[in-house]
Amino acid sequence: MQSSNDSLNQVVRLFLRLGFTAFGGPAAHIAMMHDEVVVRRQWLDEQHFLDLVGATNLIPGPNSTEMAIHIGYNRAGWRGLVAAGLCFILPAALIVGFLAWIYVHYGQTVEGNALLYGIKPVIIAIVLQALIKLGRTAIKGPLLAAIAVGVLVLYWLGVNEILLLLAGALVMVAAQAFQRGVTVASVAWLPLLSFYRLPQLLEATPVRLDQIFLIFLKIGSVLYGSGYVLLAFLRNDFVLHLHWLTDQQLLDAIAVGQFTPGPVFTTATFIGYVLAGVPGAILATIGIFLPSFCFVALLKQIVPYLRRSRWTATILDGVNVAALGLMGGVTLQLGRAALIDLPTIVLAGAAALILFRFKVNSAWLVAAGGIIGLVKLYL
Image (cartoon, rainbow, N blue to C red; front, side, top):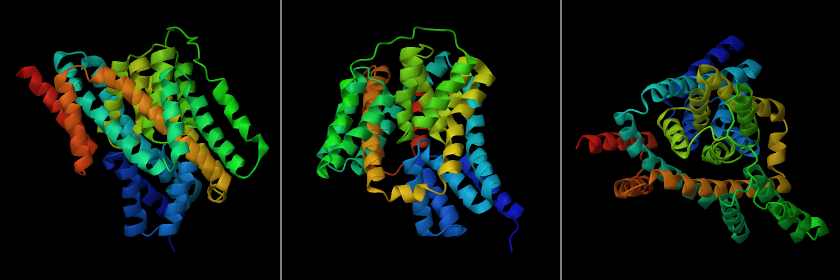
């Protein structure tokens, strides 16, 4: 009989290795975990694994990180829950932190700018591919498509992203209630009536560590959908409200998050370091990932039942398409910062073509974009 220490050691070894080697985004991470824990090690059967995937879609936060936490808990209890999450997150956070140090000290050199010149258009293509793929799954009918488009337009007009996610859920609940003859369905439209352009109340302020932690804690607590939806939250808080980052710096942070293994949410580590050095990186990383540990721990027993509820599934559908709308809006806005001339437009188009026609790891495309930027500099 295997001891709990043996199980814990297995969890540590597996997720430490995945933390250094899991490139390609959440879908690729989950596929790698499936291969490791279902096919190779047989820690879980297919149905249990699918139940855990469904559970991660019902709670906010990074899906692949939450899958790691779920698997760790199933294999080694509470110690496994903590160990799996930390081992999956920390390697990526350390790599991103090191790259952030390089960026702060050398990113404004001629070579650094040339590297980022080639990487940014590729990032736009990668986000666009994710948007289209997720859209094929999430948009199941005309109403969901209309919600996605409506959220995109409202986000472009300056509406708060958390309210838009809530509105997506409420509109779907209203529609479900209407179909069942519930007269209170129109209540779900009330939030939309209050979503007139929100004033930008916060001017540029000095960077504060407590704000960095609380902003990332908020994002980790409410963000549904793909890690790419993170971009909308980051832009709203750090670019538009606090003016601590520019669109160019946000794109640079996204590029680093794409090129490194592990969770895309380690973009927070990069931003934290750029804003406030090592303390900022640590607090940003803790803030954005802490809610995932709490959600998995608190909802471990009830999430499988919630997933089977028709009302919960309806809410999730609305949140997912609202998240797609946010992704679309931020892609358009960041595209203006990345596609600045004909070469960058061609590079983005070529990257998109390769992504849609071939199964290429996005990290290789990001590297190729950087090389092209350097080549252009020296030609």
